[in-house]
Image (cartoon, rainbow over all chains, first blue to last red; front, side, top):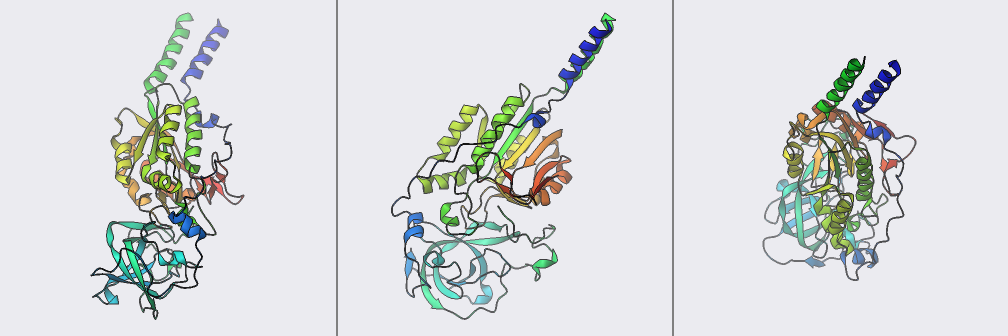
Length: 199
Length: 230
């Protein structure tokens, strides 16, 4: 009788025990090799990016996308030495640089893409200036490298003006801490340290 | 004695029945980068367009085989990134994802915005009755953010993400008290897990260091210096 009771209790306990599903999950984590991508479509943006010859620097006067209308923006390419991925400054053509914004550039493959796509290096257009056509997006871009938000300029076309002197402006959006290494946040109330790690 | 044994059985089975409200298992999947954005970079992401999707389906399959009968299994997928990668590839990835969900017989919901995601977590089910009992994220991340969009709309940036400061919009009572949560993305164990625990009183396992999706299957820690943490 006692054995029977023990059996019943054991059975009941087994049924009552929470299912430790996660503890049991294991086994098949493998997968066959990923399928091979179809061949690049001839003339696609990725095809051009991959196969077109690259230049050392932009070609003055080169135009891409929808250009030529008034008004336009003036854009100054700059590299963020703090490790951020912002593109540079943009201002309206009749403003001065004091009104410029540090922006994230939204390219439109097939219409207009960042001028550096034609160059051998992504920094090859640093301190070059361009006429930009496009508009600001209603959303902001999150830069995971610096945990900050940037206004987004949607590029519809550009024309290369030429090389320019570096601007005497602080790189980055307003409010960026002067010393990124301090552990301070670029966003109020968020104790996020500088983090260049993303994957 | 027989009465006693029946009583014990009833008590124990009854207690299980009282706890046996159906739960919901959520798998959240972010999107891949565009190759256009990643081409030529030293650390170039997402050569394979379904690295996050394949990991998710493997995990969904394992959940299916172990979840209690009656539990819901829901797969939330960030759609815009797969639409744009479809256009780049010349493949219809959306229909492929739908086919995978159908084959697994799980609930598939696409979302376009963070707000839609949060709305589903809070109101997609009656959270008084159906709690989230497991939550897994597959996608790009840094220590402060789940990046559903990454290097897909804007090179190396994100326009759709769930930052730790967004967690306050998700209700703590959405989760079962013993919910099991994990981010399979990079760096979540360095900060996100702490905020998750503080916000929901539920632990989230996350990686300290990087995880690697590039070999197919479930991601692994990138090297011996990485570890899982809560």
